[in-house]
Image (cartoon, rainbow, N blue to C red; front, top):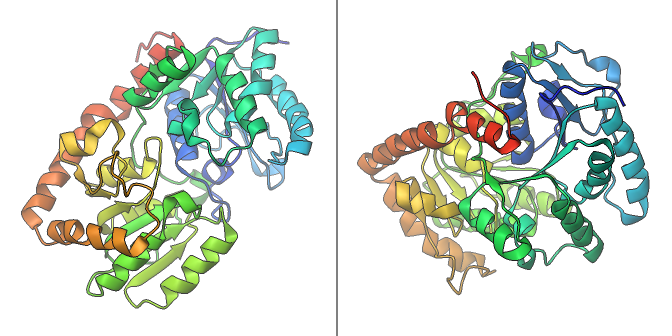
Length: 396
């Protein structure tokens, strides 16, 4: 293998294609958004940055100056989650890792890819960085839906990583208790993203402003049903639902149900660049998840001065401590995993109405959010934290 630049990094991110290409027909989420922003700043500071991702179109679509930074787009593999194809995926992944020839290799999700990456990094004396995506990475008790094989591979890769990055203090503590691992904290980064030059004029055709925005995947733990029930209880308020197609049946059910309500805009699967616009056009952001890591949507909301109403998620208690919105249920509440969506909507209603009806409080939260992002999640604050985690000097 060729000699390596110590300031070279490869992000393994199977679904980041839509962000690095600007192609609107491919979706992605918060994990990809975080890597996209971090990669952009590292490249700005002179790093050689590579991506390994699924590759739905011809490689001729790319060039090295695509974002006017030092990105490389020629390394892609096809990921298939079926266990009997894992070995094939691993072979393709190893080939891509070899071609990218970086010093740091970073994985966030899916975590089980850290296992083959650890073999590669150990053999070629490179550094494997495991970057936490969800609390379940550090807390095995949250893995009820994981297969034993995936959980085993995840933990093997985790224990054999050179650097562990956590998003919150609670995750860092969980790594210490559950794995005897000393993780580094790197706050999620927050800034508005703009489309690549190829699609820099992506149009935004919706002029609608909404009272409450809900955004998430279509998996059961996100509980979109609660916002549907809220819309029924608050016909005078306008709601918008953005959702990807992780679960096709639930996505279809949500679309059918929402289309019957006059006060609900079902946005469906939006490209991240379009999603930015909706955070600028909402008054409140609603989170109804059972569990999260550090929701990227929280940062998008606060970057735009939008208060967050969270049913039960409050990472490191920042919503409560910094006055960034409202948390409806405490983490030890008996109704935390309640599936009575009508009940959960009913107890959320007075909180939402009290915020929407109080302009002074909304403006106070907007100021708090703007200040919180500036002091804790701006690139100026977060990039040095990443340099420290990687053991690099930050001279810019």
